[in-house]
Length: 255
Length: 245
Image 1 (cartoon, each protein chain N blue to C red):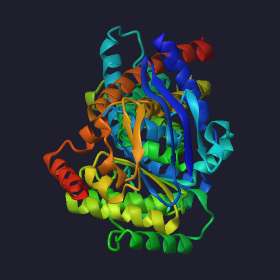
Image 2: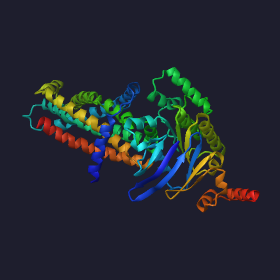
Image 3: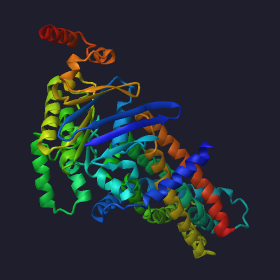
Image 4: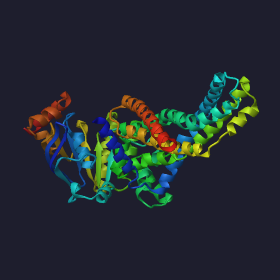
C-alpha cells in the first residue's frame, strides 16, 4: 500500500501539487486521472522519487520515502517497476536485452536463470517471437508489452504506468489495460496508472483519484464514478457525447 | 550567475559519475563499446586531418624560408615542433570535440528526451556512472590516437616536402632529429589526457541535463561543441604556461 499525505510540489512560483492526500491499495489497479496540466505526471514522478516534494510524505508499506537513507531508497526503487508513456526502451538493446537489463544489474543469476525468467515474462505479456528484435523494429503495442515485461521482471511490489495506452489503437489499448489488471491481481502488486483514457477508467479503475489544478477533487471506484454528482468529475469524464449517453442510460436505468 | 551555476552542476555531475559503480561485468562491455565508438571510429578522420595538416605546415614553412642563409632542415624541425606541440594534441582535440562530443551529447540527450535516463534512475541505476564513466575510461585511450596523429602528421609533412621539392629527404630528416626534447612529447600527452577528460565530460553534461525535445538535442550538441572547444583552448593556454613557461 502507498499512502500519500499532504503532498506539495512547486516549480519556481508555480504551485503544481497542492496538498494531495490519498492512498493506493495493494492488488488493485489505482488510476490517477485529470486534465492535461492537472499535475498527474508530477504526482507520479513524486511517487517514483524522481521529484522531491517540498512538503508532505509518501509512505510505502510504512516506509516514509523522505526519511530513507540513500541505500534504502535504492532498495525501495528495486521494488518498483515503471512503464513510461513512450515505453523508454533502451535503443541499443534487443527486446531480450531490455527485459534482462534489471536482472543483469541487480541479481547474481546465471545467464540461463536470467534467460528463463525473461522467457517467462515475455510469454506472460504474449510476446514470444520478438526476443532478438530491437525496439525500433517492433510496433508501439509490442513496445508497451516489452516495457511491462521489463517492469515486472524483478517481481516488483509497486507498478507505475504513465499513460500506458497513449498512441495505441483502441483494441491494443484494451489489451494493455487488461494485461496490467491481470498482472496486478496475479502478483498482488500495488499498481498506479496515470491516464486520461476513459476506457481505462471504466475497464480497470478499481480506485480512481481525480486531480484538478493540483488538488485531489474526487476519489472512488469506476462504479462510483457513474453515480457521482461532482461537477468537475462529470465534466471531465463525460466530455464526449458517447459517455454522456452512457451516463444518461445508467441514470434512467437506476431510476 | 548562470555560468557559475553550470560550473557547480558540472562539478556535482563529476562527483556522481564516480559514485555507486555499475557491476564490472556490465561496465567492461560498456567500456569496450565506447573505445570502439569513440576511439577506433575516429582514427580515420584523425589520420586524414593529420596527414594534410603536416603537409600544410611543411609547405608554409618552406615557402617562408626566403633567406638563403636559413638552412633547409628547418622545414623538418618546424614541422615536427608544430605537429607534436600543437597540431596533433590541440587541433585534433577540437575536431574530436565536434565528432565525438556531438555523438556523446546527442546520444545521451536522446536518452533524456525519450525517458531512458528516467527509466535507469527508477530502476535504481546510477545513470551518470552507467553513461559517462565508460566514456571517460574509453577516452583514456585518446593519447594513442594523438600519437598516431603525431606520426602521420610528420609523415605528411615529409611527403609534401619531397613532392614539392622544397628540400631533400636528408635535410628534412636531419631537421626532425635536430634539438629534439623528449619532454615536449610528455607535455603533449599531458595535454591530451586533460583534453580527453574535457571531451568526455562536457558533452555528457550538456546531454544529461538537457530539457525539451528533438530540436533541443541538436541545440545541446552545438552548445556542447562550442563550450568543449572554448574550454580546450583555455586549458591549452594554462597548461602551456604551467608546463613550458
